[in-house]
Image (cartoon, rainbow, N blue to C red; front, top):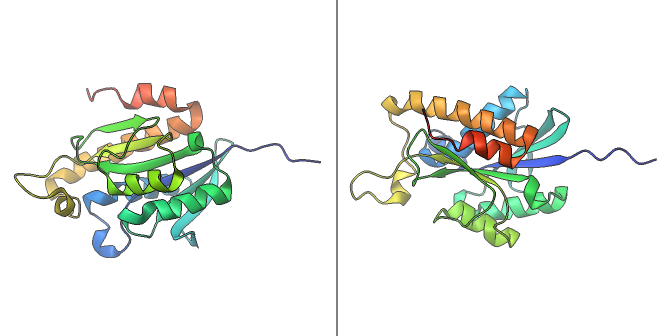
Length: 196
């Protein structure tokens, strides 16, 4: 007798491992995944495929949450192994990442697309051999003046940005829940609306 098929989702938060990177702009993917794990009473207590992972259930769906520990530029190695191991179709993969082309306070859910110059996303696309998978971009704003983006993304958020960051993570968390509950189109309609 076969068990009823349970839909499984793999949610990847991008960031860099290590305490020194914990509060940096590049780590908003980790930050959002920590929010969601806390919501589900889960903790990242296991290692698999070069990632910290945890899994649980959300409204009848199995969710696997993963924070690759390979450093950002090699994230695809971990994501490729996890999608293969758990047999995750691209439509059930969601990658959460920072975006310097969006202002802090903005989020954007997309069904597919290129890397937009993000090295972690480029690595994932290369390892999966497709860019047809959903991604949730969290705005971190552009670097000031002539600062190099590679340096900027490794800076901590400034004290006067923390309230807006927390508000953004709350809205992104709601977006993630909506994606799982109602699908990408409904979530895009709600999440991609301009901030009032």
